[in-house]
Length: 283
Length: 283
DNA sequence: CATTTTATCTCGACA
DNA sequence: TGTCGAGGTAAAATG
Image (tube, rainbow over all chains, first blue to last red; front, top):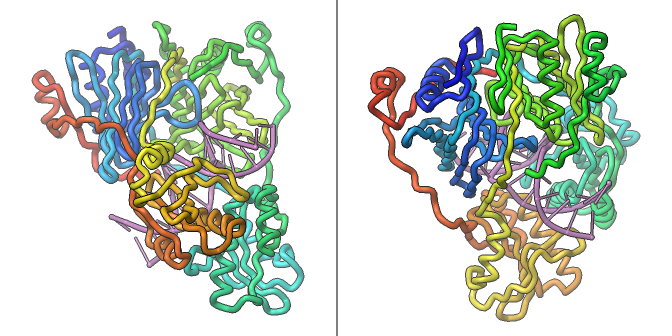
């Protein structure tokens, strides 16, 4: 091994041997650290499907809840993974370390053969904050309950997330002439599936209350062309409504510089953007 | 800064100051490295929705394709992210570094305020291999074309992925008495949505060919109860079929030891599993 | 490019 | 625990 360190929350190893990695792994697991490996490795998965990934450089992340991620140098998604609750273990075969993560139900196995580890870290990651999100369908529903005329004059919303035979109706209410109104909310452009869903709910209520007394309204910021067609064929209606958001992040204007511009101005500026080189990345 | 190193594919910094991070960031971006930060940070997002995450320890990953991930110590999913194609930049405000990633369409902004960086890495990640996956719906379709009796005696598959008015039919064929058969494939347990989809296709074909001449069959390893009910109500059929996989990974038996057992036997064994401590992780 | 469909989806909610 | 539906879904297939 070239070197290593253990200052504060992060322990790390540079070009470690199998036994060094095992030590980091073992102590990292017992004190609930996140483990991160930068490694040349082969990956095999078998479970709901089955996959094989030949050797290449990847980043491997093992979280204390059992989540196991293998990331390539592209994409938001891990190329292979295991969800929370999986159990990690390892084996050493003539100096080569193989990480294993097993999920019980459904039975799934992920194996990472570490051919060369460039860098390994364990991170005592303390985080007590939860994400707070706004702009959801629930908030669209709130908005409509507070302001029913967004649907139409005289509309009265009565139920939120009303369970029926074949699903859950977002909003069920009555119009001014007393007919039932089924409202399906979509926070973004509504597609065929959204219309299918609304149709299913309307049919279900027609069966209960009789053909002529049920209206269906799809509420979304916009419609796909296919959705519009099907909606009209089925005599369903559409209301345009965007999901509400509290306030926008202000976005500061900032300078964009190439690398040389940046290097020459490092001490003078406090804001940058550097462009990636143009070489194609294929993986 | 405490120290750093640049041996081979990974450069790293320990407890770096803003200007050191900026240097790593800048050079990492121009040579298409993956950047990884272990940091105490605050995260803000605004775009299709809007979110805020108060300060805590997280791992930040920036890939050369623009993918930007912020991971907490739990879950398979990043708590915040930006997809490939996003553009990263940064600002320095009195010694504090703020990472920014902007997506053009739809317009979305992610900001990470780095309050304290414990460890920073840039990784020259070379990977020329693609994942090879087996066990998909396409393979179910192949299987049925090779072996139509899996559906029923005398079934003749005619079209694969046949485009119709409101979607694409997985398999369209005829039964031995010459009636059209619409087949919808699901590689896992089929739900209400799957039945809705099949129903939509069958209705579309009934409209073309007449009421009595169309059958619909849902092919999947199993059905949800709701799906079964709707399927029966609609006079649609079900065939059990699991997606095919080539062969299973063999799974070696291995010893399970607690940490002390492991520590005492490090030199004698080549296979381990250590249990995480039982303290609850809430985030 | 926009649209549609799939996914080892993941995740949360609820029976 | 299983079932069901939503998602800042992401990513692939398709027109």
